[in-house]
Structures are given as structure tokens and as C-alpha cells.
Image 1 (cartoon, rainbow, N blue to C red):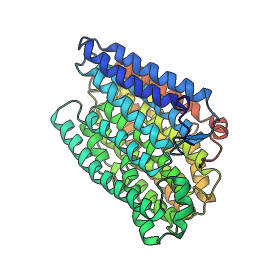
Image 2: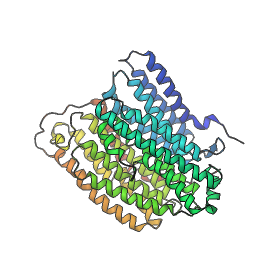
Image 3: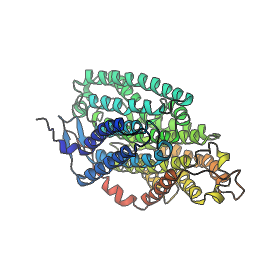
Image 4: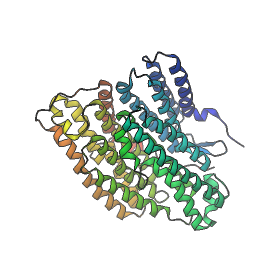
Length: 470
């Protein structure tokens, strides 16, 4: 019997209703006074957070098992909603009083809804639908400014997304054909007896779409161009929020739908993880543009995140470590972008020279976030990276842990290239203008990044558990 309990989907309902209300309200408000839309976005996220916390620990599937509500879904909800709140804080200064401000928040809400659906998708058809909902608003966001660089970035983003979206749909069709069902539970039972070549082709097709959303090799080409070409607050959203849903969706796919498949998906993902972290780090080494540097940094972080996915079904620590790392990465990456957004006229590393003298708290936030992305204690990324490394080692991927450790040490180079001029006491070429909303958001995200480290133990306990199949 189909479970259609709407109360189980309150966070998703809040996001959907807020998007519709924001769209309608934005049509009637004066074009230069659309602050209420921003307020509605924040309230919807807060309401979703409250509903998620209240229902934490409840496990069920709804709509004939196509959508699972478990620890991964609830953790994904919290991360996405918090990330949207931070993104709103970053965006306020840039887009306040802009004629299309309400459209920005509507697109953010719809993309966030699609991302949340990705985390709980327990059926190939819902996975594809969530992929589209999490992608199409982002194409519009990338070109939101309607300038040359944004339009070019949006076009590249859309073309690659459309191509890999078709590949993903074709892969889902193949898996459905050989498995006889689109539900993960049924696929987990039937793919073991299916032809290995067909299963491999279908899995690679579906994985291609998910790798595009995550920004992993070989579907990473859009990340640096879009991050540099679009507005900084949009870049912060694009490099953070979609990854939350896509990496959890990848974990759910391989652990629920492919446990008995003849395909060695763990080895494939391990190779993708190693190549992704290495390419991201190498490409970031000599970047001068700070947004492009952060873009390649996010690619390398994806490699570390995929380590936990490779250990799915091989380590009990895989899922909790993945969720902890994703949460820590989200707030730390948004904190780094918030500093960039707080200094709108500083586009290259040299522009940050002497920042410690002029804007000491922003300099501190920048140092904490960048060192946090390396994995420096006591930040949350350190705890997340340590547990992910442990899960990969327990899963039999010691070689991948060695590759990740080498990459972690190497990544320190390009982060220090940015930190060093910022903390020098030399005079800054000019006093940098500061956008106050972004600066305040940077301080908040930095504090959250540090607090997540000491809270790693309780968070791992809260994230403990397994995915449900029905």
C-alpha cells in the first residue's frame, strides 16, 4: 500500500510552498523593495530545520518506497537548509534592491528542493527527476547577471548538464531493463543475476550524471568556468549545495541498488576519487584568481568525499564519516566564499595583501576557512577527513588513503599562497571595501567550521545508522 503521508515531507513542502509564494509575492512587490521574499526564504529554511529535528530518528519510505526518509535524508535536509541560509546571507549585499532579487531566491529554493530530493531518492525515476529539478534552476542562476561572462558560464554549464543528463537517463533505462524494476530494493535483488556488461553500462551512465552534479572528474569542466564567470554569491551556492545531494545520492545508489551487482563499482569510484583530488590540487597550484582557486579546491574536496562512498558496505564508519565531512565542507567552503564576497573588489591573490592590518577579522576568517579546507585541527573538516580516511582504510583501500594524504599535504601549497600575503603586515595597496552582510556571514560560517570539530563525536553518533530499503 502506498504511503502518502504529507507530514513526512514537511521540509520539502516548505521549500516548494516558499518558492511559489516568493514567485507570486515578487511579482507584486516594488522591484527595488523585495526584502520580504528574502525573509520568506529564510523562514522556510528555519521551518524545515525545525521539522527535520523534530522527526529525527524516524525511518520510513513514502510513495511506494520511492523516497526514503532516514539518517542520510535528514542529515542532507539539515545541510541543505543551513547552506541556503548562509547563501542568503552572502547574497543579500550583492542583490539587495536588484530588480530581479525575488527570482534569485525562487531559483535557490527550487534548486535546494531538488537537492533534498536527491538525498532521499530511492528509485531511479525519482533520482532522474530530482537531478533535473536540482539542475535547471542552477543554469538560470549561473547566468543571472546577464553579463558576458555569466552568459558564457551558463551556456557551458547547461550544455554539459544536458549531455550528461541524457546519459544518466539512458543509464537508468538500461538498469531498469536488466533489473526489471526502478526501485533500489528490487534492483539490489535482481542485478546480481543480470548481465555484467549491461549493469556496468547502466551504472556508468547514471554515475555520469551524479559526477556532473558533484563536480568530479571527468564531469568537472564546468566548475572553474562557472565559478569565475558568475556572481560570487551564486558561485558559493553552486559549489556547495548541489554536492550535498549528489554525493549522498551516489552513496545510496551504490549501497542500496548495487550490493549484489557483478560490477566492481568500489574500484571504479576509488579511481575516480584519486584522479579527482589529484587533478583538482594540481590545477589549483598556480591560480591567481581567488574564485578559480576555490573552484579547483572544491574539485579536490570531492575526491576526498568519494572515498567514503567507495567504502560503502565495507565499513560501518562510511556513512557517518561521509555526512560529517559533507557538513563540515559545506560551512567551511561557504565561509571562504563569504570572505570573497565581503571584498567584492579583490579578485586576485595580490588584492588580499596586508588584509590583516586593514580587516583583521576577515583575515582571520580567511585563514581559518582555508586551513580548514586543508584539514587542520580543530576544524570540522579535519574530523571529517580523518574519519573518511579511516573508513577507506577499513574498506581495504589503503592505497587510496596514501594518495589522499599526499594530496592533502600538497594542497597546503596553494592555500598558503593566498594566506601568506593576507597575513603579512605590509601596507595594503588600498583599504578594501567590505560588504557587511557577507562579512557577518563569513564570521558565522567560520565559527561553525571550528565548532564542528569538537562536536565530531556527538555528530558521528547522530549520523550513525543505515539506509532503509522497502
